[in-house]
Amino acid sequence: MQLWLAFTSPFARKVRVAAHELGLASEIELVETDPWTDPRLRAVNPLAKVPTLILEDGEILYESSAICDYLDERAGGGRLLPRAGRERRRVLRVQGLTDGAATAAGRLFAAERRAATQPDPMTPRFEQAIAASLDALETEPLSTEAFSMAEVGAACLLGYLDFRWPERDWHAGRPVLSDWWAAVENRPSIAQTAHHLSTTAPRP
Ligand SMILES: N[C@@H](CCC(=O)N[C@@H](CS)C(=O)NCC(=O)O)C(=O)O
Image 1 (cartoon, helix red, strand yellow):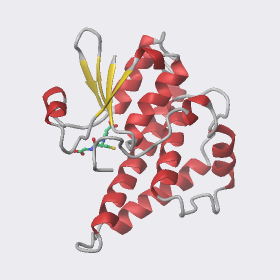
Image 2: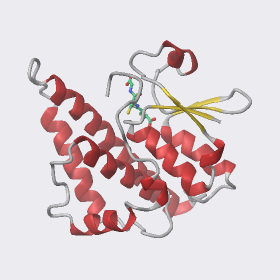
Image 3: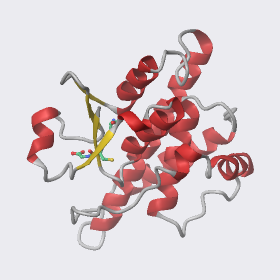
Image 4: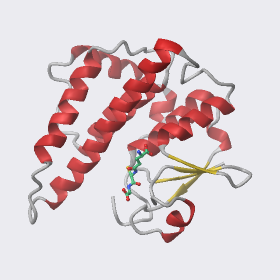
């Protein structure tokens, strides 16, 4: 499999963490791309977004949740995403929450970068979405042992916040989430997928 990614993308990291957790990381070739400038990406994904996964037979998957669902199925099924019932709905809800917060964080980062020349009136809304999502995660029963897509999503959100804003303290007032992150941040799937700026493309 080929995973087209940017090493700054929390959604691409989700796929990498999921692959590690499922024991599939060695089957994935990483192809670094810049979604903003690489015309090859739109040829395989009309949205020109990362992550995009190309399977051995040429089938193409995009949307991190759909890709992770496929990886889970490929690893036997029901491991990161429960097959049915209330727990499946909970995991999907938390994955949706963390995806939404990561989207807000990405838009906030871009808005702040432009702010000197072009203030963005949406900035407070992005900040509120991130803060309220972290508050919601504070009361979620996240496991430090068995990972589901809820833990994968939460880890990728927190990792992205620390990567983009190392000076901003999301821990304050969130002791449960903070302890959870301390317990999992050195887990191999997290440690081996850390964000970094592009080695080739100029855009972060
Ligand atoms: N909902 C998508 C979000 C993917 C996404 O927004 N990726 C960003 C990088 S973090 C991207 O490719 N942006 C390029 C663009 O929006 O055109 C997913 O879960 O995969």
